[in-house]
Amino acid sequence: MQTDTEVMAYALDLLMRKQGLPMEVVARIMAPPLWIEIDNMEPKEKHLYTTLRQCYSSLLMNGPFTIIAAHKGEMIGLTDRIKLRPLTAGVKSHILYLSSEESAIHLVAKNLDRVWSPRGGEPVIGRLKTMKPLEILAPEVRK
Image 1 (cartoon, one colour):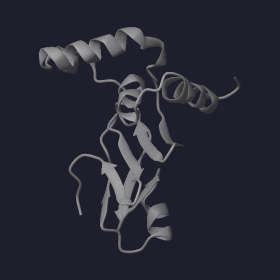
Image 2: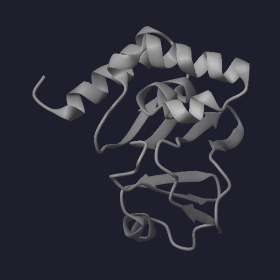
Image 3: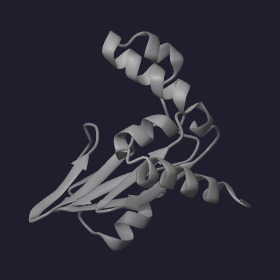
């Protein structure tokens, strides 16, 4: 492996393709909540995140990163937990746009329905559904 990008690609392949984990779990492995946040969770959620942190500690991505990856009809955008690298998401109709810069999204899509910058470690996931509109999993966003 010669680059950080290769490490991310192999990690995503391991977690999603080989182990069959959903993107939401992969995001929480690569950019998990801080221990102080886990300590304040409800017992069931605390157990889940503690287990993920312990089992996959070597896949916690430290340092600045933004990833945008696609896998079997779904796409994820994710940054490091303290957001040292930018990520912007936009939606127009049923199309999800992800980029490191908002201006790039505006170049390819005018009059977006929504645009936002997710918090650090907060995944934005878009899924294609057969004969249905795109499902977008994201926090509350500004219009």
